[in-house]
Image (cartoon, rainbow, N blue to C red; front, side):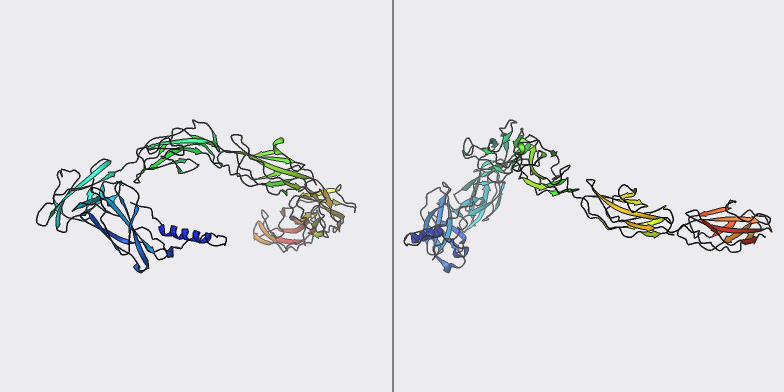
Length: 629
């Protein structure tokens, strides 16, 4: 059985300090609490020996030189509190102040020269007028299991013992005497007694039968568990009455609210809403705290009895709903978004209302210190995890103020968030880019490459390339192309006329539709010259009906195709303007071979390969004759 340690030495020391403060003129200061090292060690190995009407106590201690004296505490089986019995200068004490039929419990402490008292020793038990004794489970009041350890005392010559759960010793047999035998109590919870009698080594039975009793408690039960909301919604500061009926007193009853407070303690002492003390009914008038919110929550009652048996949890038949207005959120400083002239991006802290969150209502005003509850929100965000919002279609160069209110599913509103203000930027024209000198590409007669510097404006919308044949090029000129990728800063203008001067200008457009033009660049395309002719090798016979042709490669940038012409003896001279080619090889200038099939045997044919460019100009190779086999 655990007892409270009494710090008499500490109390005396603090009283001495207090008297010292009153005896001088100095202002008292806070007391200095003693350290653990200032206390003497705890007495150990306390043993009690019974001899008729007196008990002899002996004990041991580490470092006995540090002890000034010992205090002996005692209680009897009729009381529950230890009281100071006497003091002793040595580690032995004889108690002769006994009453018949009463069981006594002892503890010892040590006091040092500084007046500090140690922790109390473990307790021991003794009974007067007994040549023998029996103690169940070290003198505990209750046990939770039938198997217990007995502590037996008997005269020195005791050899045998007989143990029984009834005074008649039915079915009990003599057995070898033991000081601490294990024993099984009889079935069923309640008061249990164990009886013992003894024989000496000569077979003589002692006349005295000794007994001890204890309460066996193996089961904890909850017979009823209720709460009294009756489906009504509760709020902070209101009371909920919990009532748990256990099967015994002295236990610990608690309540768990699903997704809410846990291990709420109930009482059986006539306080905190408990109707009667020590009746096994544990109750509580639970005052709802400010920060609790649950929706249709189950409520479970728990009970652990005085010896640690755990009852099966019982769930109340009704559900609890506790409403709480949402907590306010904090809105952060808005930042420009998009074109910056017409949009602001808001961000705020996430709502703590995880059970019945409904929405974030966003309010906006052109004047500061506004009351959001007098306005209609500009929008509502219904996803709790979404804590950003972009306010669009605002006026450029204008200051706006914002606040946010959180609403739950029950319609309760938080207090308004803090107020923040931000100003959209003025709607300035975009920054112009620099157009580099246009460059001719290909053969220079029909393609021009344009490059320019990158625009870095946040409200960039597009690059637009304009072209004219006069220096007065502007956004009314021919629109060549529009590009929305801010990183694309080059373009090849194709299908131009040869020997023509073109003027270019790059306009940057922003998201508001404003535009700024670059410098004007110009370039003169090259004249469209005929392509470079190729050299045709003498066709080689493959068989009686096939000739193999090959020629040099044309490397002109505006290459379009090879066209192969054929004539035989007696035919007019080859003229592309008057004849159709026998083959056209498009696109790939590296394709410089051709097999002419279906010819007559031992016949001579004359060939020419004409190169055509993308402008339709052409030039012919040398004529080359070839004869089939």
